[in-house]
Amino acid sequence: MPTRRQFLSYGSGSLLGAGVAAGLYAWRIEPHWLEFTHHEMPVPNLPAELHGTTLVQISDTHVGTAVDSDYLIDAFRRVAAFEPDWIVFTGDFMSCSGHEQVEETARVFGQLPSARLGQAAIFGNHDYGRRYDRIDVAENLSRRMRDLGMDVLANQSRNYGGLTITGLDDMWGPRFAPYDVLAAIDPAQANLVLCHNPDVADLPGWGDYRGWILSGHTHGGQCKPPFLPPPLLPVRNRRYTAGDFDIAPERWMYINRAVGSLRRIRVNVRPEFTVFHLTKMS
Image 1 (tube, one colour):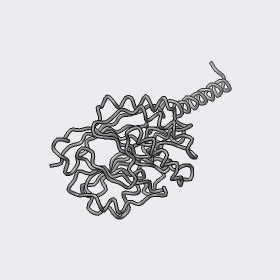
Image 2: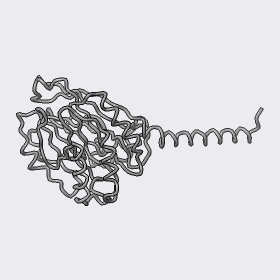
Image 3: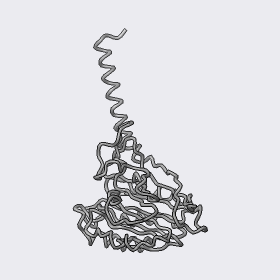
């Protein structure tokens, strides 16, 4: 029979082992345990021929020192199985001080499969460098993405086969100017808005916009205690964690949990690609 000292020693060893295992899980397993979530997306004014089409949302890859490029490339290759009609990217391509990650980002995104009707993207705050103010860095990245066939929309709209996608530049960046482009959205069209930071949904200027807003930025908090909200969120509106939200009548927002990480740690918040199945509203 073990003595009290031996029992305490065994218990301490077990706790230490459990702590090490938990740390390894949060560092090496969950950050790469990618989940493809599936959601219906009812779209006002969707043309009948687009009913049942597929849109894949990717967000916050954070190409850089904290995210394995091979993991991202493998994830991108898996997207092809869904035969997407559109692929949209909702910001934070990379984590960088300046231009040092642009070419690696282009190499990684060069493995993203094509989409039948187009690829559209917006910038996040990290795409403007460490202080979120380097327009030259964002422009360099934009040129490289265009070389790969992806449109980076900076307060712009474009119609992709019957779906008008409007991209807002980042709320924390130097070119945030959403009001004119939002006011110009045609309510008779099928519309989708991309904005990196979900706090934008609470700003004035949306008018009678009907449709979806796709965002990222929060990473779902990255670490979430069971049954409790995540303690750290980079947003003013603390309810904007991850998933879908009713914003106004016939206006919804979806916040993607991100595929990458600022720091390689995730607990109870798996990385995500979102697969939307568009449906025509009656």
